[in-house]
Amino acid sequence: MGQKGYQSPAKKVLSWVRKQSKKVKILLGLITSIILLVTLKLVVHDHNYFFVVAEAIHLIGLLVLIYKLTTLKTCSGLSLKTQVLTAIFLAVRLYCSFIMEADIHTVLDLITLVATVWVIYMMKFKLKSAYMADLDNMPLYYTIVPAAALAFFVHPTTSHILINRVLWAFCVYLESVSVLPQLRLMQNVQIIEPFSAHYVFALGVARFLGCAHWIIQVYDTAGAYIYLAGRGYFWIPTVFLAEIVQTFILADFCYYYVKSVMSGQLIVRLPTPV
Image 1: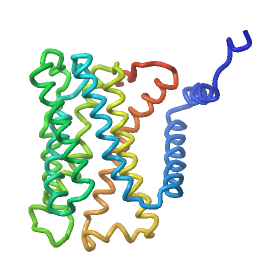
Image 2 (image 1 turned 30 degrees about the horizontal axis):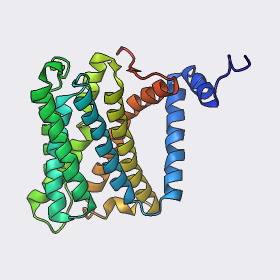
Image 3 (image 1 turned 90 degrees about the horizontal axis):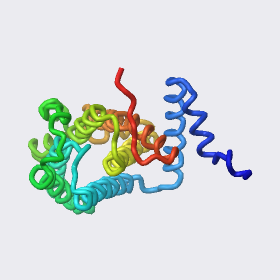
Image 4 (image 1 turned 135 degrees about the vertical axis):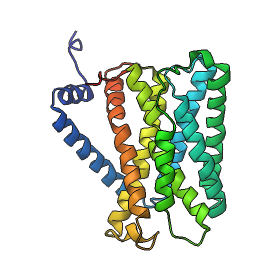
């Protein structure tokens, strides 16, 4: 009887946040991000692990999609164009990683690429009738062309041949905007079912970890890290900016995802565009 009107502390906080203005919500989001960054800095001593964990989380998100495609037999709510862009930057990064590093990142990229290609195959051939082609309407060249042009002019200065350095920059820039077609499709649909929402949220978490790596490295070196790779050029600052852009691109969706989960809802509802 006494439990009837009971609200958990988490729901009380969420209810309070809902009542705040947009500016206050943005400020709260920034404060939360700073707290998470400080926590990560104190807890994780080798910040290179951030990239490994980020890639692993991306892979987990893809496994969620694979589960959806194999059990529910539908690809509704998924952007084929985002998967194609993902396959492109993973293939390029796999090549560059093999040439330049050949470490755990190479293994994770290979597994993730195979999973992505399988998702593309299922969407394009096996579950073609469920694909929302009319709503997945962002042209691929909107992302590929700017990423390629920027990579040609802004890339790392290392001992590798020019084409490899340009390709490395291209995959970094393309990754930062590869989720845009998926977000565009979700804005068109406005109601996102659980598995697609889990996948995009996983991308958001992965990008936050990647962004955290750059922020902490820059902080620890008092800004000197910005010019370590590129010898005074704009490579590291541009990568840093790309990570921040992608994090902010996904931050809005992650807010509505957390809001839905905290409310006990399985479906994420996005606001109607003004």
